[in-house]
Amino acid sequence: MLNIKENLNKICVEIIQLKLLQVKDTIKKAQESANSDTKSSMGDKYETGRAMAQLEIEKSTKQKAELETQLQLLERIAVFKNLEVVANGSLVICNSGNYYISISAGLITVDSSQYYAVSSLSPIGKELIGMKRGEKIQFNGKNIEVLEIF
Image 1 (cartoon, one colour):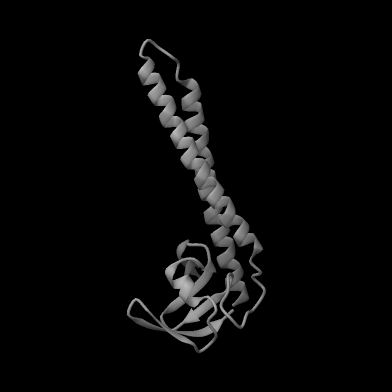
Image 2 (tube, one colour):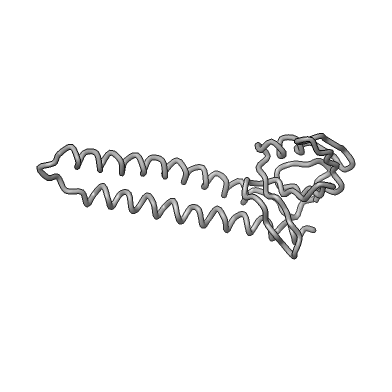
């Protein structure tokens, strides 16, 4: 299972790195757009274009910071550590599905098995954090039992 945990972590890192590249590209294009706008006799149009480009840069810069924080979180996860209690970095095998507590990356398939990469701040992540093997919760009308923790 530690191999699966390591693969899940690598996939999550790749997802974040790809998103970071896209956001950096968006920032670069918005900056180029703002810089290439030349002031014409239509001053309002020029100012509007620059303002829109600046808003895009600010929004993308915020996304970039959030993605970098997620990447740092993934890098701190000790994938070779087994825990008795569900914590950040845990691979949790439940009767209703498998959860990798890390970042919200959605459904990931590894070796033909499906795992949900969820943040510890997500609704299901909050419920699972601190649980031990054999404990049960009710979540969205489903009875969920923790079968294994890796």
